[in-house]
Length: 203
Image (cartoon, rainbow, N blue to C red; front, side, top):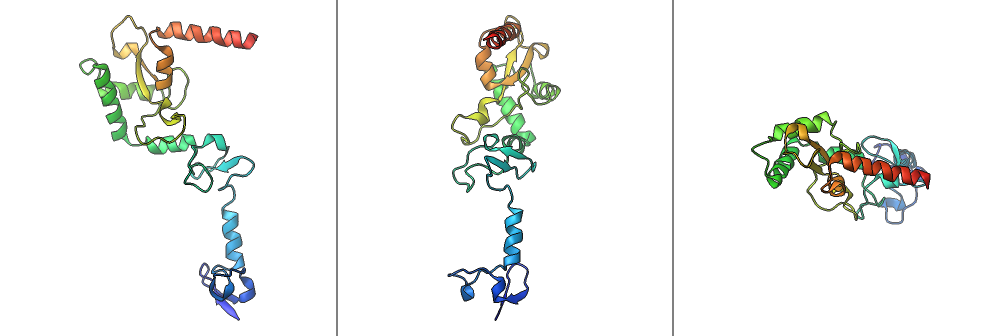
């Protein structure tokens, strides 16, 4: 007896198919060979030893490099955090809209234009001035329990708090860094960080 494989469209002997009680003739619709090839193609598409292959960059990374996703069979999203950020934030219109909102909040529209902030953003290689973490401009639904996706949303801060906003007196940092800097001048904050690192290294 033979059966047509719905994957390769070849007529094959019934023993070339795995058993499946709910399938036609009690067999899978795909032959053993096609099912085997499919399983091989899934290599690292499910976590193995705490690692998963990113569907975009195809690099095998640890699970903590992915946002959690309860609706996914893997428990995480298919793109790693870095690739997902790039995918989400690749829209120039979203970037412009986010920066426009920040300028309005700070009431600096008469001093700085959207283009000025974007130029600084590009000069910083789209990274936080202090940490080199990729800057984001996400304002969609919550993706993680700790709101990681918005921690490095673009924030405009002054280098010198005693001076007015200007192109030469601002840098872009992540939102979480802005909260840490608070009312300190940038150099004062960096010096405090150096003291903390020195204390930690000596402990």
